[in-house]
Image (cartoon, rainbow, N blue to C red):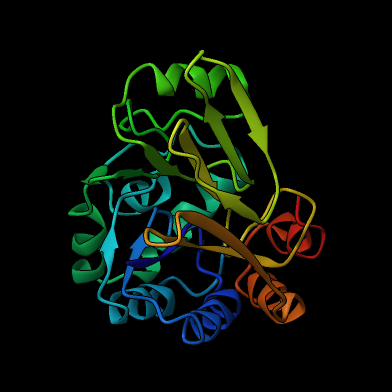
Length: 242
């Protein structure tokens, strides 16, 4: 099986369209979306429609549930809260219902899938370093877990001795003696200083995860944010990838 795994589109239609075009070349058997289709960007309705057209599995991100009124936005920073309020105003009741119904976790052996944490998904904690990853490995059983949320593409592995390491290579060969926690990065709001959209492919037959970075029209996506009256920083950061 070849899984197309991606996350954190955040209403960025230009990035989402380019990622869909790239996936069309990759002979994908099934799609898994790891949350946050909305928030920050100016095209929440269009990105929801595009996501649903892929007919894949979707889990909930914190921005998805906040825009649907399912979790409080008070924990968000001021710019994110403004974007959530704007997004909620744009969405129909049916679109909000779609977001509200998204589950927090999907498990299909040999992998688990969640937005922020496969072991504690509801509070949406961040996995930012080896210590965070070690806590995850202690609490899930599958050989591989896929997460997102930090908007950084990276992979953590743990060996038989319990040693955890971090890897930022684009191609990860999965060793049978190790377990893995893969952060799929962000399609629409990368924060690893690479502004290109990020997506990955998990090939169970080849035993590998491959990341792809896709250039898209960041200026067009930013201009839509400015025109919508959303905080300017949300558009500015698209050009910087941070």
